[in-house]
Amino acid sequence: MLTFHIRSAGQQTLLDPAELWRFRHLFRTILWRTIRVRYQQTVIGMAWALLQPLLLTFVFTIIFGRLLSMPTNGQPYPVFVLSGLLVWLFVSQTFTSASTSMVANPHLITRIYFPRVILLMVAITVGLVDFLCAFALLIPVLIWYGLMPSIGALAFIPMFMLAIMTIFGLSLWLSALYVPYRDIGHLLPFLVQLWMFLSPVVYPSNLLPHKYSFLYALNPIVVVIDTSRWAFAGGAPPQWSMVEVSIIVALVFCVTGFWFFRRMEATFADIL
Amino acid sequence: MADIAVSVSDLGKWYVVNENRFYGSLSDVLGRWIKAPFQRAQDVPYAASATPNAIWALRNVSFDVEAGSVMGVIGRNGSGKSTLLRILARITTPTEGHATLHGRVGALLEVGTGFHPDLSGRENIMLSGTMLGMTPQEVRRHEDEIIVFSECEDFIDTPVRHYSSGMFMRLAFAVAINLEAEIMLVDEVLAVGDEPFQRKCKAKIRETAFAGRTVLFTSHDMDSIRNICQSCLLLDHGRVVRQGDVKECVRVYKEMCGVIETEPKP
Image (cartoon, rainbow over all chains, first blue to last red; front, side):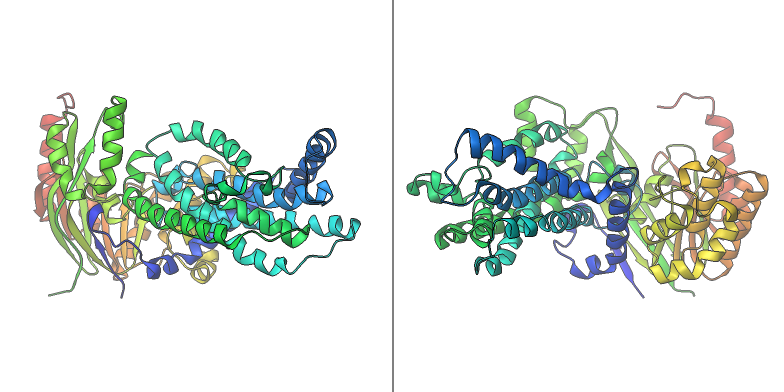
């Protein structure tokens, strides 16, 4: 028989995998509900996941490709921008929805007990589903330009995990801070915009002088986008030294974020 | 002597009322912000004495509930009944003390937990059931029973937002009462639906109690307390006033209501 011990907030265990496993059905239920409800009463449904990168690629190609003649290391601009944009849209959308996941679900948090991190995991999984849909867009574009994915495509999966880790770590911090401090709601869109300019979405990463590469690698999304470009648009792989820095940064986000989240978690139901 | 299913000792919960506790000067907020994660929960009582609006919603509460018995928790509004059940359901954490529960806990604290208006009644049964802790298999096993109990058979595949409020409540209650849990926490949900349905709910709760489950039950209806419960806990302002004998607790409660009712709430 299961035995539960209820203790005050400071005495809980930091990580309880067995408990997370017990709540797997709840994870599935909330995930299913989120996906189900999101595309209800929309006319084109899941096509939204495709339309956004498609339209943005079109706009960016005209502005940055044609009007500003952005250097792309010889790659056709639409492929260049789409291979970065797919990663970026995943990062920005998932980061935003994961960071707001606590505040967006007060009716669940104040009514039932479950490890609150489940809401964050749901947000990331939903983002992943969207990403996989949008990713299909790349195939006709590659065929159109007669491009074959390079060996870098194999590296893309682990690098994508790095993006997920980064999002997870950062949104652990922000979602927990968002509960008492509604300022986060105003900060988030600004933060995402800033982050986009700091990531090589519309411009190539080698536009930055080499001596700044360490600073640049503090944003783990840089090497993820570079890997995606290397894999699908051609060009050079990211520097390994940058990848190392990015992995450490993402790990720090995750560990500190998880610790902070667990400390704050107990207060969510009282504040929301 | 029967086994103890729920054991609570020295439970306390501290709240700040009438104040957004995160207001204050920027340096205040930043200072707290930096300190907060390092602060242990045990330190909170010292903060309580420093904050003028702090109240103990619950303090020094200890009791044991035998497995398979029904305990009533009574008290006036704001006496800490709901806080107690919310702590036991683990929705919120206590400030001090601890509790041990042997068995799966099903909480029926607010009806409609996890219901989504855009999904059908049948989909919501699955949703709400898993949210309350059932496995999908268990929900499917009880589905027919739930639908019949809710009296919503004709509309079960219609989105819940088209339901009348009575239907909504009945369905929500039907899901919750069919939970397979060893320990049930039930809060005031008897005030659901019309008279016949309320009677049905009461009967079902009694049946639940006789089925060998442990139930913690709060209500303002002293008749159901006397009928269902084997023991009782009377709370006032977060403290235990009486515990044990049901008749004695109900008598003191009625006395309290009669005498203090006219006084304004602090």
